[in-house]
Amino acid sequence: MNSFGVRFKFTSFGESHGQAIGCVVDGMPAGVKFDFDLLQEMLNKRKPGQNSFSTPRKEEDKAQVLSGVFEGYTTGAPISIIIMNENTRSKDYEKDVFRPAHADFTYYHKYGIRDYRGGGRSSARESAARVAAGALACMLLREFDIEVVSGVFGVGKIDSCLSSDEFDFDHAKNSEVFALDQNLEQSFKDEILKAKKAKNSIGARVFTRVKNPIKGLGEPLYDKLDSKLAHAIMGVNAVKAIEIGSGIQSTYMYGSENNDELKNDRFLSNHSGGVLGGISNGDFIDIKTYFKPTPSIFLPQQTQNIQGENIIYELKGRHDPCVGIRGSVVVNAMVAICIADALLLNASSNLNNLKQIYKKNK
Image (cartoon, rainbow, N blue to C red; front, side):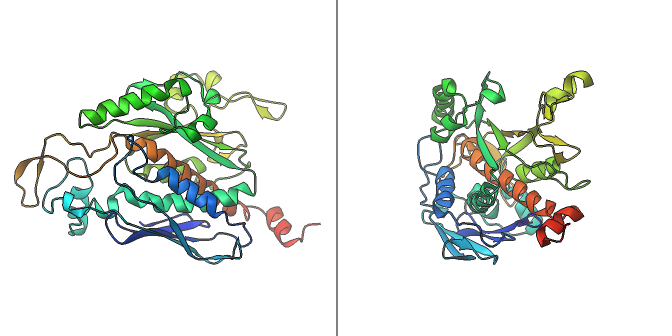
């Protein structure tokens, strides 16, 4: 599907080597101050070609807002944003060859259409549209002092030994690889460049935190906040796993170790990652996301063509040596979208909320 969300809903459009990509966001309340600088800042963090740690493909990714904003504020109408593709190079891609570990194979067998141009719709290029939608979600969340922050805590076989409360989000904002541990900044860079020099790629691990979340966000049973987050994040290109709170580690614990005890209206730990029964409990919402190595590598690999013939293929083109770096920006955007959607859904969760909205409560 090309749409995500219930109340705060966006639909993305476009292909990697088409004329443009973009999104239409529906459900954004009227009267939110529109911050174009924030929109462009988030797109700039994700855009390709900024340094040697991302793809050489250079795109300006300048957002054009076509509707839904008037005199600096949202109008309540759908907000449409378009981003032109200015640096496509379709000649790098062979029409009849399935690139190993790419979606070319499955898309072709599902739709019977072969869009070989950089992966077409399945390309991570589409994620710029998600970041644009996420920027709008951040504008809404800012009205409630809710902030979503992300960074990279692991690359390849190197992981930070810091606890999540020690991660430096301010450093990550200014880091070329969004490193949460400034002592590992250079090690992360060295690992990426080593893989790149070997014509290979490498995986990464991302930590995301929602600060100041409101209690009560999430729609049980089948739209629990954690399941919604998992749905959103697993839809990001190259993501293979996520964890909420202590995640996998909690399966090694006793209940007495994993339970977050309460005292003086605060939790003494946060193994739950800020979500209980699929509903936010007011603590930090903590998420770890795991990115596989970019499947686009420049080594000879065995594959097949459309005719079913076995061939040895050497990839061409321009690709990220570590997709998890720019992917961290996309995860941040999708988390913001989930929280914004949950915020709007929660407005009608009980009668008191409705009475407050319509000023009918006694």
